Amino acid sequence: MDTSRTFSSNPELANFVVSSGVLNQSLATVQDLHGEIINQNEHPVRHKVSQQSNCTIIAFSSWPGFGKDYIQERGDLVSSSTPKEKTPESFPLFNFLSTKTNPDISINKAALELFASIHDRLPTLKSQIDNSKVLIITGNSLGGSVAILFTLWMLETIDFSSTKRPLCITFGAPLVGDNGLQNAILKYPTWNSCFLHVVSDQDPVPRVLISPNNPPATESASQSNVYKPFGTFLLYSKSGCGCFEDSQTILELLTATYSEGPRNQNPNQVLELYGEIVEYLSRKVICRDTTRLLQWTTPPQRAGTIIQLEAIGLMRPQLQGQNNGLDNLITKIEKQETELAKSRRQGFNPSKKLNKMKINMAYLECDINVILFKKILTEYWEEMVDEAEKKPQKEGASFRTQWLFAGTNYRRMIEPLDIAEYYKGGGQDYIKSRRPEHYKKLEQWLKEKPLSAPNKLKKQNVASNLTEDSCFWAHVEEARISCQLLRSGESSDREEELKKLLKFENYVYDLMKYYAVSPEIFLPQSSFMQWWKEYEEIMGNSYSSNLSNLMKDYKKYATGSLEIP
Image 1 (tube, rainbow, N blue to C red):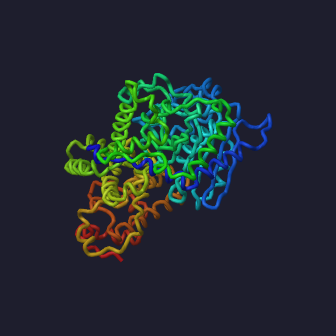
Image 2 (image 1 turned 30 degrees about the vertical axis):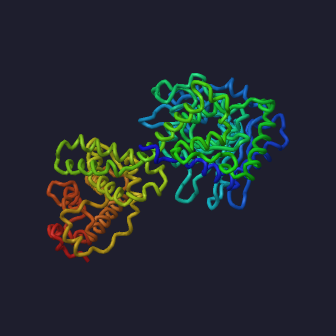
Image 3 (image 1 turned 45 degrees about the vertical axis):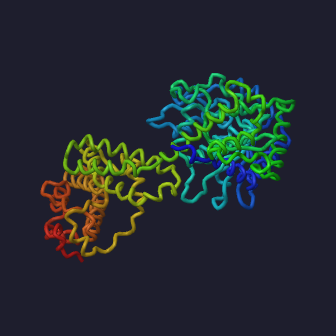
């Protein structure tokens, strides 16, 4: 990438967040909750639901005594690989974050224990959410950690088709997880964009769990068993604020911007400090008031970085003379932000691999190493469906139609093979008991309309059509099982089995009526034709129905000449 053509939009993002009023509303709710009378026997985590005209705010607060020392003493990480009996009861709620490629995640034990303490309140809190409004989840210090975990829980359980994406705003929250948790969040930009962490340069809590031996970005993930940030960090100082998203940049700036003072150790004064800063910044246009006019020869990327560092108070003269001084820091941040921009452009884009998958599907049609190409295709679609489910719709808008069309063809080609393998092994009720989730999602996203009346083109091309319902062969196998039960006399409810068969018969008739099945179902040795023979024996020669009348001339179906009433 040519960095001279790159610029940072983070200062504008900082201005937008501050001027929108969201920070004021969130912090005001936290302050109200913090100011309520605390009973000695009260629960260690309190919450407050505030219904505003434009949003619903859910704020969390922990005991005032749960400050820097408490967090530092309980900085243990709980891993997903830890035996269940040794983990807080809330940890299973976050198992969805573990994947095949990222199996191990770790979360701060203190945060997990506090979240576990509100487990019984989760359904009530969820019921108070107004789907027509923006949901803001907020908290300060360890209350912010609970807010983060509550947001993650919501991201897994929320129905995005009817509910707006939540925004989690924390004030002075400590880091909550390791490299595994960070990777799980960063994998989905939609999730990562839900978190905004506000940090004052005089607050020690957000920095308390940063390891002094934090490995640089070049080291392997296996060495990164320390706390890592995710989301957007809004770093504040008396000079202004700046937004940062690159995790390594955030770690370095959290350390570099800390300014110890007399108010740092008092949680009440730290919260007051956030109130002063938010009010101050609400009256100030950040970039105009805190930045100087840079030389026109300064590349945009570097100019943006300098603006950011000026805003958070890092343009201190004492840094200029150090070996790893300001120039080195600016260069390092430039590089990290550039890499982040590259990774975004290389983010979720199934269309890049889609053409290759189409080639694999062609190989499959030619019976070239069916097992290998079936495995490749399934791994691709499992991954893409998982990512697409958690990505913003607009990111996929450019390829959505093409992608779903390819996914539909994949489902109609591959799922029958899975069904055949399942029933060959003695399985039953594939649809309810065994059907993989990615097939269900692909079918759901297609949002197929009711079958339309067949047109001439569809009838003429029926010989090359795939059966539209990829579960057709599962229905066939279940119908054969019903026939076997009736013929053997093993059925405990003959009438129920006959009802199932009549339902299947009508299902097949409807598919044929709209030319929605492939002519291959009529091959002499197909399981469908075997079912039909078994069914005819059970129903008798005198039996007449719509399907039985069609089956008299089923060979005409392949040519599109079968007249279907």
